[in-house]
Length: 209
Image 1 (cartoon, rainbow, N blue to C red):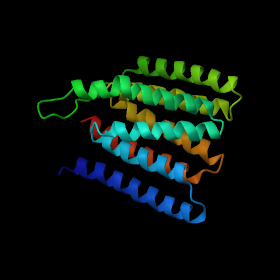
Image 2: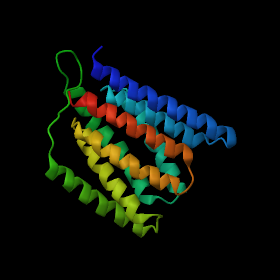
Image 3: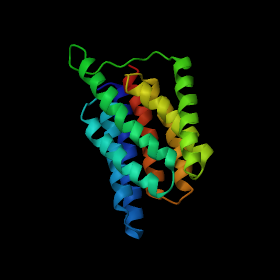
């Protein structure tokens, strides 16, 4: 095993231990089934995605369903829209890409090139669209919620097309999500997004080989 692989796996182990420990502590005080399930599905789905496994889609798409429900309950309407986008882009873009783009060993082919114009365009469009949705429904933290989701749209579209830089955008998106969910006191999801950020770093290292 190379040093890079050891670092990738080490980051994922740290993220898993951290999230499970936080969930155990939080659930001893007040068990939250939906947040716990969402956190675990997202964590293991992202780990599988970091390793280019097509089985990621079943976990991540289930996470999107729960995330949409939880976001609706907290009036983060831009986030509701995002979970719908996550689900659809995986079904229409990610799954076909993973099926069609494999090397001679059967591993999914990923791309390292950076395309800043496309990234900025995705983020700008996503921020505007999600901002209008959240404002229309009188959501909470409209500006921050919309910026986070604009970045996430860029991350998702890049990632579902095999671009490694999508992981870097996810790191930034997860950091903003930590702030958003901390504002409503959902510490399980705060820990979840912190763990996702760590896994995103490992994903970038693996996809940018």
